[in-house]
Image (tube, rainbow, N blue to C red; front, side):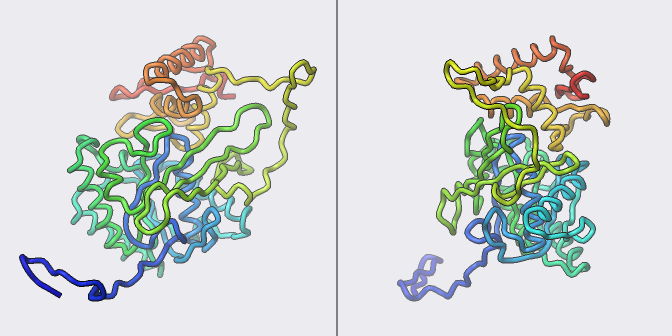
Length: 380
């Protein structure tokens, strides 16, 4: 070893022994570090994160990948905290249906909070130490922290600022180091169908892994369960490009959970209408009109817990509504536009048509955030 200029140079063979970092989920999520899960609104990020937490609690494989370390998860919720208990119950029901695990919600080692997070690494490290101590009182080993979502949990002056993004990522790493676990932050992509985060590339540049959640929606009466895939876009330790299929399944009480496509046999439903061949007399599938798609998306986003925007007064309880911005993201995800302007116009036409038909109403939250809510005729 040579020391010069304040640097230590080594020849091959002189490197110090490095302890291999274990996997949390084999070949996908390491036991330590910080990473991102990207996906548009309604893609299923939150349901997948809840499934992951339940798999880590029970040791059940996550989308076919072995869980190598079991323990607790801290859910740091910047949005949709009011639906956490429901989503946990649905995720545990899905675990029972797919793997026979019968963990009850009060037995699950999940610690959660509705929060806004500090950006300073020292403050996040203190938070991580407190969470670790709290889990220790229940004899729970912390294995994962989920931030849902990055934008709503942190108040960004400018998410395109590389220095600000870098501070946040360093803070998440400090949070994970203090807890002794991996930190996974959920975030939105910069464009429809994109695999780059919205904002500065410093987010993904400092991430140990980046997962992209991509999902197509089933359409038509009696259509198959909604399918999707999780793609390993970036990893410091595993081959990139791995694809893990998933499906969002319905629970008996109208909830939803994520699982491997082959884990669960779907409950029987109405028979699908046969496809029409040219010149035949078979019944045709009805093509979903844009206005109908907007109404459906509003209902699905509300059921998924995406009924509020950070900093904006939410609609009253019992009102089925979703932020217009989230509805448009999902609408364009299903119907990719040729250009941003074409996408904006197509969405506006669909909304106007639904409003004219008396199926949707606009509701303006305080602070300028627009919501789309179902009318009584559509809600029933």
